[in-house]
Every structure is written in structure tokens, then in C-alpha cells.
Image 1 (tube, one colour):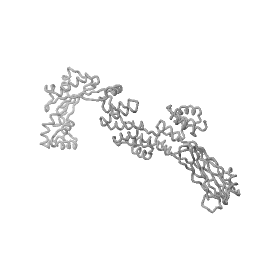
Image 2 (cartoon, helix red, strand yellow):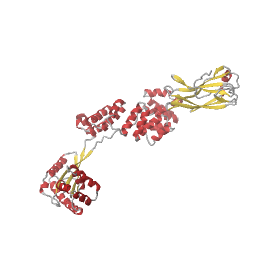
Image 3 (cartoon, rainbow, N blue to C red):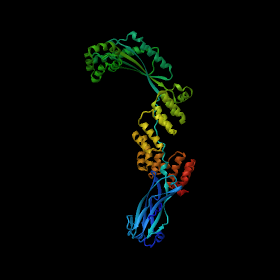
Image 4 (cartoon, rainbow, N blue to C red):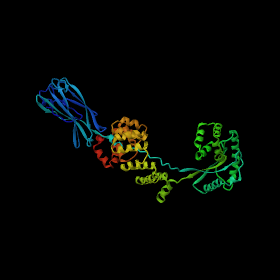
Length: 543
């Protein structure tokens, strides 16, 4: 009956062949050599994998002996054993792997599922040999120490992008007035100088000058001809109108001189204005007219096609074309919006005057996440602002309020940012398969960096390095270290305990005892990291 041995940890294990009994084989077990790769066990993707090579010397394995070797990992709090490997001598009539009497090297892969406590552990091989109904336990041999869990230092908080607040420090505005001309005329009538449109324009200029937040940066005078008649004739007419319009503008602004440049231009035929007026009209055939405009680009063809619709053209000549024989006075204004300081003051004193973009800007200016969440929530609920709902969700995620984050995301568009945020939530909840689906759907650079975290957790360090190529920061430095380059980790500047711990690991791998001690002193300000350091095999040579 087969008897299980127990674990296999990097060292030596053997059996005796020339010996006449299991006891004799056990006595000679020191002649059997064992090598383990890696020499120090490592946890990778939640597993400990190693390869153990056992060399049985000549005349050691008895032709009729059966050997059971059980790899066992022993750790604080328990042990975990594999199914035993069973070997037989060359004269045994069974189906186990044969070890000839002239010796052999047997290579086997061992695998264990990581459980907490294995940070301080070792691998051993436990063996039992049987021969002629006699059994003997071989001396337990320690094979390797373990287990390195440095990959678990990866930051799993996830990276998130905020939506732009859309706040404009400078708002561009216009104020406009216009004068109308009679058909084929460039004369400015007195009635147009005193029209309601011009009076409103003059009032706007006065308000601009009185408002310290507004600056008149330039004024445009644009004269037009309606798109009926010959194009060359209309071009000359619009040029004349630009000249008389400029004179009229000087008259209109005589008592309220404008600052900044005045730009005078002309447009031969105002097809753009024509389309706008037709679209806004209640003409019966307006859709047909707009279709004609889209079908033909040649002005002459356009005009002829429209003239062919005689009933329509009569309405156009009466209702639309007179409005296009004009000159426009356009004041281009820059409005200086609230400064950051003013926004913060208004948050305290008069928050209701702030619109959604200003509230979102305010949220970006405050430091505490609780206050950020309040401001994003106000912008979201008061203005039904989807970007604010998204930023509120991001803030909740950073506060680890994942349920509230999901509720906020329910009100957002399902775009790339949404997918990435849902992936970060899944990552924090340990739902790695769901996180991967979300990050893949997002397809952004930020999601790519988050995918690198999953690569680290799955033990695929090269794939993580590819995704983080050219990136800096904690996870990029950790990935470089896991791929054999400790320099980026050693160069990290932040003095928080987590970064200090990673620097200590890098220093240990570089053999820098002073840096190990200095950084561990900083890292041990975190009780959890202080406890980890006591067991971490990275520092075994510095204890």
C-alpha cells in the first residue's frame, strides 16, 4: 500500500538501491542531490511554481523499491502538500516512473496555491520507500525558502480621468446692430440710423464700456448684397455699401467711440444669410429651397433654379431678400469670467449664482473629497449635468464609496470613461475578469495602464511592462523591478510608507544595506508594512 510522504522544498532527497532494506536506503539518502529553480520561491499570479531536479546516484535505487516523494510547503499557520510523485525500481512490475540502478536525474514541477502566511515558508520533500512489505520514512529535506510576494505591492486603486469642467475663463460674446438698404442702393437712410437695431447696438456699446469684466477687442462691419441679380454687379454693390456703412458706423459711435480695430469687409451675395432666413421662415416650400441650395454651388444656377419656382420666388422677394440688403455692425467682446479665488468665495457666500461649469471648477479647486463630492453633486442634480455625475462617481471611488459611485455612474453616458470607471470598481472589488472586460471596452491609455495592474496580478510582468512603456510612477517602477530593473523603484521620490517600502526592496536587490534600513524606517510608519517587513524574504540578508 502506498504511503504519502509530504511536501517538497528545495534541497535533497534520496533512496537507496544497493541497500537490502528501506532503512538502508534512508541511511544513504544524503547521496541524493536536489536542486530547485527558483532557489527562492516566488508567488506569481496567486501560485507558487518551481522546478525540482533530484539526482539519484549509481547503485542507489534498488531495482525492486518503490518511492513516494511528497512536496510540502510549510508556512506559519499550516502546510500544503501536493499529490506525491511515485518512482519504482527497474524490476518493479507497475506503471510508475522508473529509476534505473545506474542512476538518473528526475525533474518535476511543483505548484502550490498561495495562502496568507506563505510569505515566510519553506519547501521540503518528504519520502517513503517500500521494499518487500517493509516501509521506511526518508529524512525530510528542506529544498528552498520562500516565498517572495513583492508583486502584491502593486497599487490596485486604479487610475481614473476626470471630465473637463468646461469652464471658460474668457467668454467670447458679440453685440450686433444692422442697417438695411433699398434694392440696388448703397445709400444709408436716416430711418436706419435711428432704428431699434442701431439703438440696441449703441446701448450694448455703453454697457460694454461700463462693465469692467467686458473688453471690446474688435468690431466688424460687413456689407452684403442679396443673392438676386448678377454676381459681379452684386459684388460692386456690396463694396459700395461697405463704404457707406463705415461712414454710418462712425456717425452711430460718434458719442461713444469704440476701442480696438474696426474691420470693414463685403460679401457679394449673402447665400448664408439667405439659408438662415429661409430655414427660420414659414414658407410653404422652404425645404425645397434648401434642397436646391445643397444641390448647386454655382450662384447663378442657384438663383435660376429658385426663380423657376415662380410662386416661391414672389414670397422670397417680399419676405426674405429685403432683409439681406444690409450691413452688420458686430462688436466682438471678451467677458472675464470669475477667477478661481472668486469662485471659492462664491461657494461660501452665494453658491446659487454658479452654473454647472463653475461648480465643477470649484470642485477641482477644493482639497477634501467630501467637499468635492458636495459640489459635483450640486452641479449634477441642479443642472442634470452628466459630466458632473461622472466626476462625482470618480470622487466616490477615490473615497472607496463604491455603491454611491455605481449610482452616480447609472446617470452617465456609457462612454470610454464610464467603462474605465466601472473597471476600476471591479478591480477594487476583486472582480478581475469583469475589470478586464471593462478596460478592454474603454480602450483608452488610462484603461491600458489599469490593464497592466491585472497583468501583474496574473503574473504576466512582460505584458505589464509593454503597457506601461514610457510611463512613470509607482506601478511602472514596480513592474520594472519585477522584470529585473530595480533602478526606477530606487529613484521614486515620494516619502509615503508604500513608496519607501518599494525603495527598500529595490535597495535590497541592489545590495544597498544603508538604503534598505533608511527606507524601511520610513515604511514602518505603516503598521501593516512593518509587519510585512519582518517576514519579507526580500530582506532576509539584512536582518
